[in-house]
Length: 479
Ligand code: NDP
Image 1: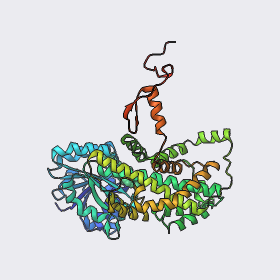
Image 2: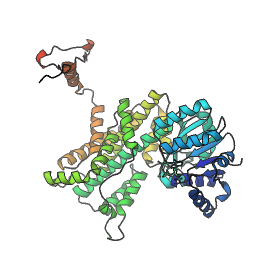
Image 3: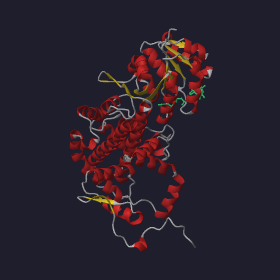
């Protein structure tokens, strides 16, 4: 056996990861179900001068045998059942101590199940979140590792070498047992949904409120990318807004249908946050906004009924929009990290928040300058909510008035702001000492005798409510 590591699944992500591994000087054995993809990979590796470090294997048993023990075998196939099928196929060829490293977009509960299944067989299982798309896979993604710690050390050198680097630090880290890596990747994607939606909402004000052309909007994003919002998503937004359609010479973005697709990681993030009782309203808002966007026919019909939105020229400035986006982002990241912190507690993962912020600084889709600030804030001490971390308190104090102005202007100007308004309401709910849930507790006690608490008098107290109005729902309604 001569290969340092094996890789199965030579579609876009797998073949780029394999080339990345080979380029870093490691020998990688590769295999794919359909032999055609192996042929394509072989020619690509040759074209890039990396064939010396790659070992193509058309037979699965041969492939496994070609990897040095204890083996580290990456699988990069379609998420879902293909992963389970693949595990079953290679299992008979593995030896105790070997490890399967699954790098697709798997649901963390599937990863946890596979980890638990393989543990008694003494086969390590690493569920690894890889972000950065095709480019990232080839030149350096952000790599979020979870699963068998012992086997992680066997693959650590390779995975650390192929990851993106930020100031000389690798954007790859072991985060925790079982499904931890895929959980963190899922929340990364949820945060990505929030970032994209908030950017789109701000673009809406520029386009329909300030009357700016796509290219003028693009110029603003380009400028913003030099300030505190500096990030991959802001950068590519500028490029998307500047793109011109070759046929019509019109801005491409003006021709693209306003229906957003989604593959599920946003929904999963929102569901798990709700299940754990952690508010993640920015992610929820972003998911909901994509769902509304996809109902184009209904929206067209509704506009027919209510008339075109009355978009009075907005008095918000570009500076307000920039700060609103920054404030919205802070709230969204505060929520995302709170979900991670809660999952860590609930699943016993000890997820390192500072490390997570660090490995998101380069390679992944949400990479940004801001994450570097976040990493140092978390390194100073464990905070449960970013909104109370001093560095971010200062930014929020400066930026939340702009978020307020933008959301208020949007409401009056009939602009939807599902995500930014959710972020503002979360902030306003979080920072007020006296809320309104006292009334909800009163209502709950009224109809369901759920009890309430009064300071100084203790909990599980009840009010004296008029019995005629109390809920008798338990009894069937007789007509
Ligand atoms: P795809 O998700 O399109 O999957 C194609 C690969 O899966 C092929 O190698 C295919 O083999 C293999 N495959 C499918 N079914 C089976 C099966 N039953 N048994 C064996 N092999 C099977 O590939 P991508 O490269 O796009 O993505 C791989 C993973 O990475 C996915 O989980 C994806 O969600 C994730 N990912 C993708 C990103 C991207 O930008 N594309 C970004 C980050 C993560 P065959 O050639 O024989 O059909």
